[in-house]
Length: 145
Image (cartoon, rainbow, N blue to C red; front, side, top):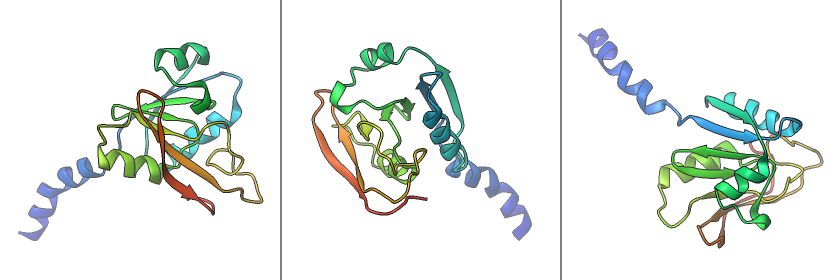
């Protein structure tokens, strides 16, 4: 009877562990974006990657210039701008905020996932709303796995 219960429960457990798919827009010439996608895929995400004109994407999703990074990702109805660590994305999606449209790491922080430069340089992940207002979502003072 225990084995039958495990077989019946297995699809539900797998569904609970499924991660929202990523739609990633990036410039074809940007290598660090590809490294971030690999980082996310290694953590169980499936990504559809489109090489495109990033100025058009930033305008389409109304990403303020000061919050922009090298790639833009759509996941779970939110915008993820740049090299945001997977645990931050997972925590944000779990919260399902209604006042924020996404997370960003403006620019290209040297030690964020996909950049991975050492020695480690601390950086912050910010939430942002439709008006471009931000709050600090997470502070990273050591490498994120």
